[in-house]
Amino acid sequence: MIFHVSLQPAEDGWIVAECPALPGCVSQGRDEKEALDNIKEAITAWLWAEDQKALLSLPPQEKPVVVAV
Image (cartoon, rainbow, N blue to C red; front, side):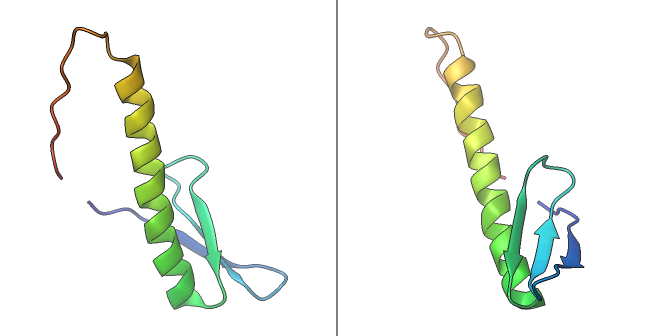
């Protein structure tokens, strides 16, 4: 999957990375490379957490099917 992210310098010199498509998915790094590496991890964690919430909302009799993207 592809996501657009924004990179903004913070007042403390760090770079803040945010993924606007995923509300609240924000990370940072000491430089652009670290910020991009960290936002990739944050995106993965965000998607996993949302999937877990959705899984819990399924009726008990439904068997979930896993699909890799």
